[in-house]
Amino acid sequence: MKFISKDISKFQDYNRKGYNKVYKQNNQYFQLNSHVLQIICEGIPATKDNLIIDIGCGQGYLIEHLCKLGYYCHAADVSGVGISQLKKSLDKSDKHNLLAKAGNVDNLKLTSQYSAIVSTRLINYLTEIQSLTLIKKF
Image (cartoon, rainbow, N blue to C red; front, side, top):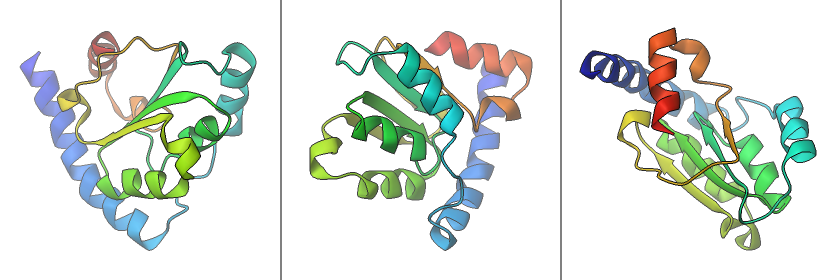
């Protein structure tokens, strides 16, 4: 498993530098994936018991909308710039619904039970073994 973990870390270190640069230049690099938002809203009620996590959230457009709709969310991304932009995008009243952390996915210590795990910008870059390792973690 160490090989897989090292592989993911190398990929994330490379992307952290790239995404930090891109996000600083364009604070709307990725747009909201409205299909994912619709699936979550139709299938999961917005309650404290239904926690949503977005792994590889980028600038957090999905999480921003979910928090504003009353969902309780965790967000993780390799880019500290993206996480910072997410936090700035929320009103004070919505920030209590959010726990957002920057860092490599294999170093994050998120131990909650999730009603939905979203990863629209990470899983597609990983091998099948890496994806399964990541999924088992959560």
